[in-house]
Amino acid sequence: MQPESYCLTALSLKFCFLNFFQLKRLADALRENTTLVKLDLSNNGLESGAARFVVKALHENETLSDVDFHGNQLDDVFAEALAGLLESNEILHRVDIS
Image (cartoon, rainbow, N blue to C red):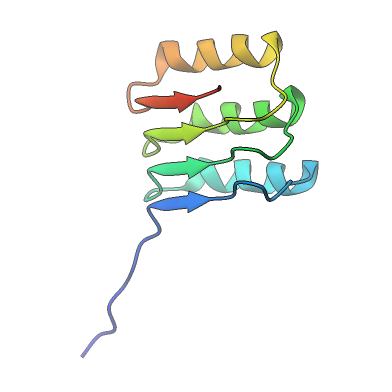
């Protein structure tokens, strides 16, 4: 009898206050992700420079459909990067940047 395999489909990292290196490692993992559909990065105090790592990774990600950036310190530079992503990404259906 084979053991059951489980796939991570949702990941909440809200209020984790990820540092630059942790966020970069997360972005690297998102490039390879094949199961995660929901990611919550809300209320992490993320600034645009660090959050853009995630946006760049989402250009390559083919499964995430819901990303939450709520409550971070994002600016116009981040908004431009996100707009570029949304122009080409047909999988992402919900992005919270409130």
